[in-house]
Image 1 (spheres, rainbow, N blue to C red):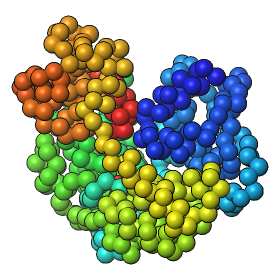
Image 2 (cartoon, rainbow, N blue to C red):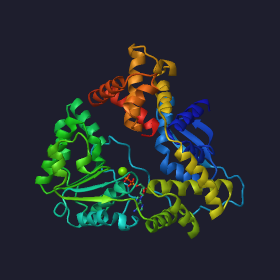
Image 3 (cartoon, rainbow, N blue to C red):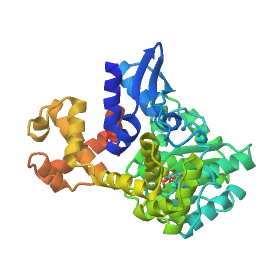
Length: 444
Ligand code: ADP
Ligand code: MG
């Protein structure tokens, strides 16, 4: 029980407050038996949602807390509230993707299909190009480079490509991987002397390489070099390459020119934020998929309140459904307005430098005064540098401001810290592990 509370606190740190409250406040501990943790949840909708979306997080929290893996079970304990909307026909969603590092395995999310991708003016071109790729694999647009802002459907589209090819041409070997995972696998193959396997897998045993978030390899010289050879090898064999990025190739910093130019050999298609009609259609489609009854006026209200990002739109819809199911309310316009007001207010509480400092302090067990002080002992200086690095990287805080917020230091100190940690992240697997764990914790 105590351990569950610790695990819960760990989970809380990783989620935005709103999300945490919506999904975890109503959950309670039932028991811990052998290798199984059983949690009580208020209804079936919660059970479905938690098991589809948060199981990995819960398991990770248990692993951190107990040092060994647990299986997680949910038991529905109805509160006997007759007014609860009926979510019994919630369509069960497929399990989330397998964890990274399952080297050699295709990790396509079966939920992301062309059928449930809503097309509008904002995404027509990348959608059409993606379909073309599935019809003429390796010969039409190669590479296909999809770029656009966060939460606009890039990952959805590449999975849809993979799923469609798997359906039409099951003999094709498809590899979906983020460039970050590519880097991790590359580094671990180097360390374990398995580069031959790595080459075989990426250069010869992949007919379709779907690489998500290529912008991540910015500044990672060795990974870029490796990817350059991967690219060439696949390209020469007419194997299909699809890349996504949150930036146009010209805008990706620290990217080798030879890669930049290759990214432009095929087709570059950008996704824009969807227009109102598309957002309404997306809200309705998601509601239908999740079995959430969503009246038209509420769909309109949601779509007109949340403009920039489909992921947020989806998140608000789901939060709305969670609140409704808990409070036994119908999802009508009044309820939506009431609930969304809180959501929007919370979303605006952006992560601040202070919260980065707090999280880093806690992780390294140093105090806030030490973090902002000037002791140079490694046990204090290193956490300070990591926190500065994270502020720059995750919050894009300017160096002078970072210096200022870390006890009035010079901007050159902040810059030097950033460079140092950046270098270590690229070269030292332990530092990278820590920094990545902190980034996850902070939701970067
Ligand atoms: P990105 O990779 O661009 O950050 P994702 O592909 O992860 O964005 O999309 C975020 C969420 O929004 C996903 O759940 C996805 O299914 C959904 N989404 C984005 N665009 C659309 C769309 N046009 N139709 C349906 N769902 C969409
Ligand atoms: Mg994505």
